[in-house]
Length: 291
Image (cartoon, rainbow, N blue to C red):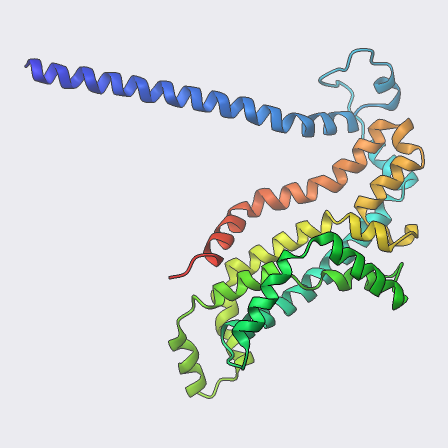
């Protein structure tokens, strides 16, 4: 009887400790979530405030009883945000599509095709990841300028259509597919290109989706290269457009309109990440694991 009572007390203490641990953990996570999310809340709140009401606040208000979308209209009409948005959409779609084709073909060549010096070539290819981005940017800028591609979509897109990391990620994923499938396909007379499209791409679709999502986010957030290669507003992307909005006076005089522009730019990526973040993590972990 005493032994049973001892077991019950130990179990009760253990449950209390587990409950206390969970309470502390979730309390800290809640505090951290509030700290992380507060800037986004403040950005959206400011974008919904009237310009006059915002300027009349001596003490910042943490809510508004009269939200307005006039700031979003102001950002699109007076700040050319719509043009920047369309430019970014064109840049993102074309760059992602071309990069995906190049990366899939290169990864397949390194993963399945046999040619002399393949391992050495792939090692040299991976060594490109060691080169600082600043050096690559300078080289690309000189090349694009010499070719007369400044202030063009081609100049924006060309330096971004390859990625050593994505090729490596897809190559590792392709190599996880059993060699027997490739040999059986070759015996049946299937071409390499057809095997790639009919077998590898469907089986590795989680990693390919991950690559697409990561590239979209990368293109949408591009700042340094578009800033260097374009000085005409007609080719500005949203990242550079925000800088232009700030410099031309709208951002300094009308903070709510500036925040509305930032919300328009940020929300699409936030939605994409919230929807596909599990696929991103699953694809990256699958691409880097063999066996």
